[in-house]
Amino acid sequence: MRTALKLVSLFLAGGMTACGTATASVTDIPNPVLDAPLTSARGQQTVVLAGGCFWGVEAVFEHVKGVIKVTSGYSGGAASTAQYETVSTGATGHAESVRIIYDPSQISYGQLLKVFFSVAHDPTELNRQGPDTGTQYRSAIFYGNEEQKSIAEAYIVQLNQAKVFHGPIVTKVNALQSFYEAEGYHQGYLDRHPDEPYIMINDLPKVENLRKHFPDLYKAK
View (cartoon, rainbow, N blue to C red):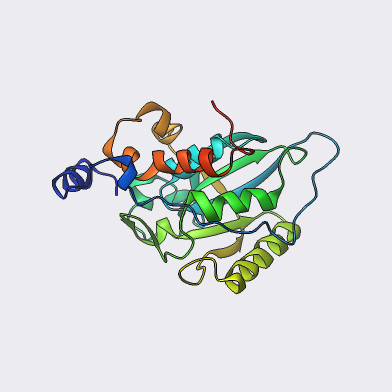
C-alpha cells in the first residue's frame, strides 16, 4: 500500500510535483432530499464510512463542524484479521474505515454523506482509490440503523439520477457488524506526517477542498 517503495516510485514518476496536481478533486453535488433533521438537543451519534486509505478520510472529517471524534479502523471482516498487515492482503473482507462520532444537533447524517461523496473520496472507483487498489479500499457505508440505511440508499439513487459523477456510484451500503480500531500509529496520521509525499499528493488536497468548497462546514483544528 503506502510503502516506502511506493513513495519512491511516485517521486521517480514525477508524481511529487505539487499538491495542485494531485488527484483529489471535488464534485459539486446536491444536498440529500432525504435526510435526518437536526436534533434540538446536543448528543452523539455514530457513522462508519470506508473510502480508500483511512488517513485522508479521517483527516477530512476531523475538520467538519459537529464532528466530535474520528477513529481509523477496519470493518467488514472478523476480529481475528483486523490487523493492518493482514487487512492489506485484501483477503479479509475488511475495508479501511473511519468511525465518526458527531453531534446531530450540529450536523446531519446526510451532510456527512455529502462530504463523503464529494470531498473525501471518489465513489465511482471500484475496489480502489487513487494509487491504492484492493477490496480493502472499497467505497462503503456501514449503517447502524434503518434510518441511516434509507438515507444512504436514497442519496445514492438521487446522485446517480442526477448524473453528477462521470460514472455510476459503486458504494456499497452494508449493515455495520463491528468496527475494529486500527493500530495507534495510524491514528491522526496526517497531522503527524504532513510532509510525507503520499499525504501531500493524496490527502492534504482533500482537506483543502473541504475548506474551499464547504466553508460553512469547515473547522480548523
